[in-house]
Length: 246
Image 1 (cartoon, one colour):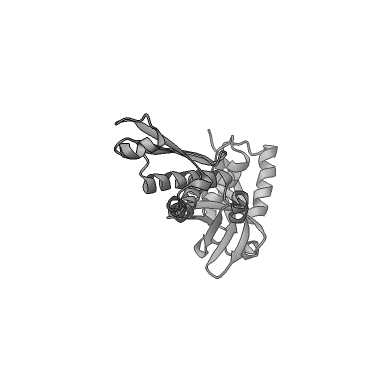
Image 2 (image 1 turned 120 degrees about the horizontal axis):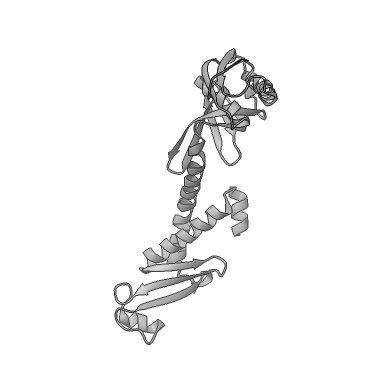
């Protein structure tokens, strides 16, 4: 069932496991008043830790440990199959929220540092206002203001597309990545992505027409020439490179 859930949702296994452990822990704390607990998904057990008498009365604690005294600690081990019904129902209620929240946190942490870089995706859909891009485990959105006039054929579903990541927003369990083809930084970032040991700065760009790039890379460098040709095909515009001192 666990493997099937991961397959059907497409969520990362580590994320699901962490969320399940957290949900079981929270359920035991809230429903049984445990002080702490240890969850083992491998053994399918959960061990609750109860302080006597703040979490459990001495009379009740004696049932689990006849040698218990006041200010002692009692541990109770449950198998998943023997967890109280109330704990199971509570866990089933909070687990979906926890797993979605953890997945969103993971995606936001992964994508937030990518702002200001270029990423390749596959065009998923397009309407009059937005192009939706598939980045694998995350969708991106390119609003109409970020399109480049004359390259709409590139925005057809199924086509690969390099985009500049403008910003990443999170609203609860929802993470949105906003991308651009119009940004002045697109071209220089494409160069940096291919030749990271050199510097590239775009000082002027007319999207779809031409870009002026300053670089510390020798203009007769064979690698630069090859990359320039590749990027020119990607953005469909004239690329003017000038040298500046490092």
